[in-house]
Length: 399
Image (tube, rainbow, N blue to C red; front, side, top):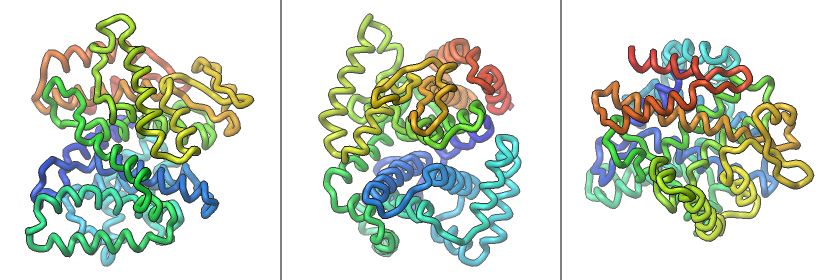
């Protein structure tokens, strides 16, 4: 699992569109985070309209598998990648499998088998099509930035037409057309995309730099892996909530920016004032853009996001990490908020630790490494001992 965490951060070093004029740096980690948010929107619309029954765990897994695949093939430009997939898919799959399978087997053998099955099949499910549509919509969002800066570059108009053609191929999905035509839904997608321009640890230089958007995806992935490691037979809704709870945990920062913990804690009561302000802004500037089913879910996931909770008799009930194990049923809609918090802290630790490995340090980063590990490594979650996780991550980063 710790090796996978390191791999996620490798995507923060993978620059996109580096053969074009770029007003801002665009990286793979941010693109993947935007992609899964867009996939969530499309899938929610398809489900609400009754067009398809979405297997959400399959959607999460397939998204992660495609992400792993791309992480291995870091240096292939999209045209080359698609050409190889069309003519050398078997050989390419074998190469990727040899690279990533030992890491996945170490994490979870069943997960590794699912990955192999995913890359070996040519049958596209609705989950595959949603992820593919989200891929091109996220690409198109980036490309608009590129096009505005370099519309005169040779070949850029062909790239524009190719992306638009791929999006049109998914117009049969109502979620795609609604996302394009609805000013509000597109506005939500746009706001989420803007989180890539908000840098984490903005008060100190780091390598690699990570954005709030990229951090959200890393937390979602770690929360999901923590859930698979620590919970005996977790129900689908619990895995779903822990993934998307991690993905959207910093959503309010699109309105407030990344306010660092020392500032929040510097004045008594300031943290609660900030939280109230975030909730107010979410109600008035984010939730007004979304349909009710998404609003209700995002409220549940983003308000008191680090509390363990269930819904019982229509009301939210907060629980200890020991108590929530008694409610491992889809009907209770369980969220392991403390687990998401642990994933958030581990992601921050990795961000600081990796910067030191790259030779860029500061007093802030050094203090954060010590304090985060001291405060969190002693925690346990059923079958998961965080002390082992922190120590294993240290070994991987320091080697």
